[in-house]
Length: 505
Ligand code: MLC
Ligand code: AMP
Image (cartoon, rainbow, N blue to C red; front, side):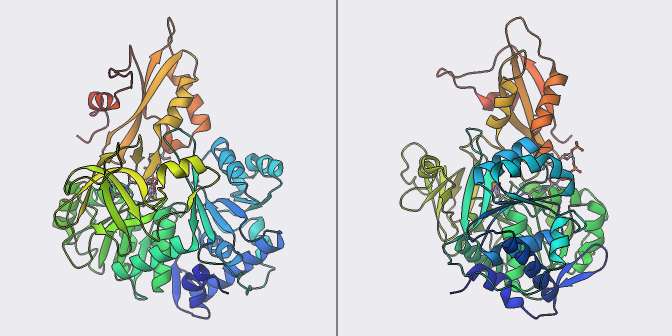
């Protein structure tokens, strides 16, 4: 037996003094240092009584220790459940309870709020602060720096990632070792990653993009990462000349382009810029090429499937498309009503099948059945078409979703809260174009008869329970919501009405 994910991502680097993480303070963590750190954390997890298959819920700032906690979870056979650092206690409570986590690891500042949740569940709680300190570190520093890797099968679960739904209830997407490993290996090869690569890594590591794409691809290739806590324009500009590749959401690219220090000379060591998680405007593509001589390589994926398509490394990178289906991934376009294939070139829902596609939603068989067909095709909810050369173009969404700066926001979750506020009869939450985040959130309210909703109080109430990135950037009251003859709110009409609220000048 073995542990394929651990062996291929981490174990293969045992004993290597090659650089893995370049940190902002000028220090470097080697592969061997990293594995020793991960092994000491693996001892803490195992000593805490966790068994293979148990979930470990993690809400911590990005740090080498946080990444080592991921490696340790894989080595111990646990299911890693990373959580956005912006989530509030009420959001976290759902994820922790729903997953039945046996261990919670959080920043020291979150301990007071999460301890009662962990205690209610009988789960352990350890802290890990941004500087690596905390109770996890206290235990790990006394632990051995080697750990006997727990055997796992490729079909065993490695991670849960929660993704919201159109009903407003988040679903835990269950990802197996082979989902993660097959995709990382495919991408590393497709994008020509090698041990010489230095990836500029400024994405968060609680989502697919920063963890399973950026970090796993680098690990598979044996390269290193300039591992930054977050996207900071000055630091990005400062570090750019030392990197050979960067992965980012479109906001990274527009922010870089808006800075005159970002020039072709600055990126002369770079070989590859990759964009994903949200649509990259063709205009950004063009500006980027004019400024740097590089064509951004756009790819498309999602939490449930990792990456599905990518523009080619060598062939034509077509602006406005997300490229071709990746090797091993089947992709087709179907009619949302009938589920049948549409004629070549027509628009429909994108469906994908392959080793990258998740196992289902945790304890939600109906939702799994509704989105994952028996024949293995996953219905993405994205609308697209395939051009004559096989390139996929995403033209819209068959799901009510807003993507702001690469974060997914499900309007239903916000509408349920708004509808409950005093003086509100009903609400509709929409995404409107935003110069920096691509889209941003606007809440449209209808007042209850003879009432005047207090918008400031409502904003405060929403603020208390939802992560900051989900807060409506504007709330407004209208007489009534536009509806079609079936009584369904016509969000397109609202989006048209408010499309200039935050649009770039
Ligand atoms: C931060 N804020 C956001 C936000 N990020 N608001 C809306 N949308 C976002 N994405 C809030 C902050 O809390 C702050 O609140 C205000 O907006 C402005 O903050 P900022 O300093 O300008 O933001 P910054 O911290 O620089 O973050 C922006 C960002 C970041 C784009 C760098 O959001 C980011 O790293 N996004 C990447 C997301 C990602 O990894 N997605 C991949 C998902 S995986 P205040 O209180 O100051 O107003 C996936 C699958 C796939 O989708 O295909 O990859
Ligand atoms: P998430 O559930 O956070 O993983 O987000 C996945 C969603 O992001 C997809 O279903 C798409 O709607 C969107 N997405 C990811 N990559 C792209 C892209 N390159 N272009 C357009 N949308 C994208």
